[in-house]
Length: 354
Image (cartoon, rainbow, N blue to C red; front, side):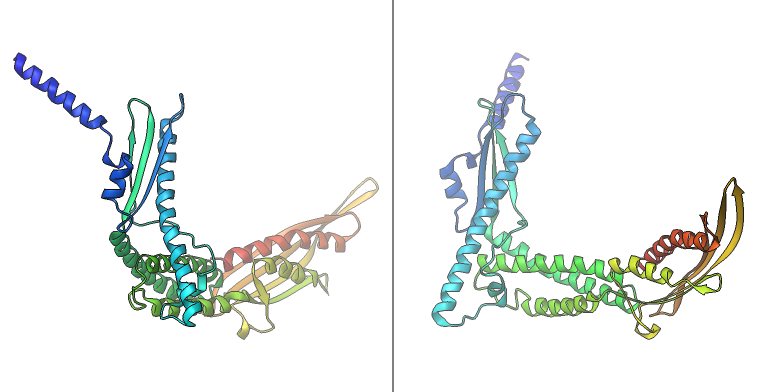
């Protein structure tokens, strides 16, 4: 029994020693030997945790520093490749590379993330120093980048088709919002292509799917140009103020819709949305108190909103608003119109944004 207990103690102690032993990457020579620069991108960071410091925050910081160092090593490679490309272009006049390089050669290449980047941490039990090592194998990074380029191209195809369908249905607000996501996907594809070129300058345009990328960028630019003018609205507004037209209602609604990208056309054939508003004022009552008479008026408005592309009536309703004034019914009606105008505008904005 004593021998078994002794064996367990030795085994536990050996395990504790192994657990507390520094990993090989703590040694700079080991890092250079096991993770050579020609095959790996690496980053190392070490931080001494201050007394009373939040350990989890220190771990997060040292891991992030190691990631940044690894990404910086790729960044250096990117910039060196761009520099060699530019020198080659100046010497020979033209080179058989890609437009991807020339389009961003003079700008700072920002690497957002590195697929497959691994990070390990170790805390020295004696000193409390926390270290982190980040690494990614060049060949693994290359494979992951190629897969991600292919996936993002597929996603971009899908998103562009969705935008085109939204435009066909007259839903330009949603189309414009969706187009922002397409730009992000295209930026990610281009970023991965640039990094891929720096990892493997011999990679072909076909492998990088450059023809597909350029085609998607052309579709994106065409859709962006189509959506640049915003939402075209045909607004038919008839407002009555005791047998006199109240033109201010139409102007106020146009003023509220213009900042959200609406432009106004003269006929329904040119519009994405056809909006009809009919409003009229009616006397409600007059109450006299002392020297003053308070005049009250109700404005009733009917709103109809039609999506022109599908000729679908998506909204039809009536709302009323009360206005008051001490001068006369006309002024009370104007007060009611000023109150009902923003409510009508809010309804229109909500409906065309769906």
